[in-house]
Image: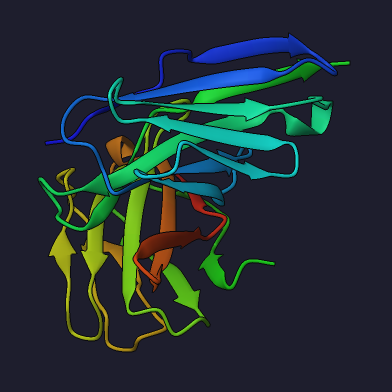
Length: 114
Length: 114
């Protein structure tokens, strides 16, 4: 079945810089890939979705890219702020195990220092 | 604000007790889920439901059970709590927006079994 790898458990950056988070998947290319934000003690919140035929998607300071050749998505936060500190999860549909359900990566914990 | 509600937010209970974690959503979503998440770890799907009277086991084996008698309500029950059940339990529901499956999560119940 599909596996997701978010290669950094933690990322520390300075306020104002661009944060780049990586999501790799191991098997088939999904029709789309999603990114969620999770704050401590809370449930994940949907941020962005990118389809396999889209190279790039933007929403305010967020940008997501999707490279089906590399089996990779990059998630960028430009002009980062301390309020962006959270764990960011990559998710895609799993056609193995529980078919038609999203599977989530372990997440990357982003800390933005003032 | 989230339209999916979980109660209680925190629960400390003794070994051997029966507990029910409540989850309700007001969005009319057919599909609902329960995830288990330990601190700093990934989400594991333990149960899901396609709709009323439907319950399925997820990818992670769990001693809990679920029921779906009404669309809006998806409670999770542990007949006899053990310390190994200590974790955060997240409920979610989903809907298809066009061809995209988007999840909405509750704030979670943090369970501690002593």
